Image (tube, rainbow, N blue to C red):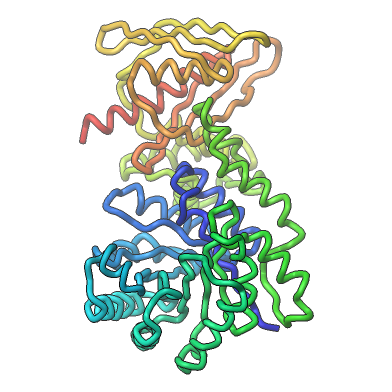
Length: 469
């Protein structure tokens, strides 16, 4: 049977722009577990956050190919590769408009100049990475002779996959099938590489067009797990599963897990649940079977810390290892959440810029939660009032109104550390700034107070580092 690869484009398109750093990592894990062949990411710009995002996702994905585009205009091949090279299965992508309108409108280039640009970028990518994909944007509206020349040049330069895009989405399935068939006849070299297709859903025929292309020899389909105006991952997977025997095709996507995973992805990508709360990432699910022991080496401990998303300084690394040893000596195993708490309490301890003076929370089942917060900064009292979706959310929003700062809330953990009616609660808050994680820890018999102290602890670390820079 022919193996049809499904390449998910959710994070590379519009839905990806609405996702937080952590949500992108969670989405990548879901797609990887589902069996998607390729996970496509946004490009890497000038910011450190972009590179950290790619590195973090590359570390989280175990089986799927991780694909990142290079910027045709900027020539940032080395920058992208440095961020991507740690992936188990990396892929570099070169996107280029092929129709004359887009070449001149988007890049202000004539066909000859664009051809040379494509050749140079594909060659630069193939010198670093074995898996290089050339994507011919707007191919169905291009000059056939020029499209043939470009594809031939890209393959000769090292492209292992060539993707044909119907960007307008105006072709009917039989027309697109004929287009693909003609390409195979006109460019014999295409049989030596994987041919992929990307279809716009303007006429609601993207899925049908993609399957029609598969019948003509296409081996890879760009699709989205969340509605993106392109082929649907769920529908393509179901079609292949239902017609597997008749068409002699198969895919690695697990149909048994499809419905549940699609529900999870829709929840992550749906912006509605983020509008009323600072908790934009949902509940974090760590693998409780992953743990460390006293006998683990420092390298293993620091690698686990890195996988949590932390970028520890050389000064903080021995502090965390030493704190871990003290805890691990008293118990059989240390879980991932406990390691989080160790990092929060041991790494980057700084003088507090913001200190809690007083707070008042009003909440109930018939009123919205409100928080009145008083913080002290350099001897000055600052006040803020805010509504929220619950006491903790209102408190965090009040802090944001006082400080004028908003950071992505990567995680919020709460657990009891003592027993009884007056049990102490421990809270861990992880904030992300510039792609880097900062964690704070708070302990109190009042869980709201513990949460506020943990938030301020993480916030003070960010403020301290920003002022140092």
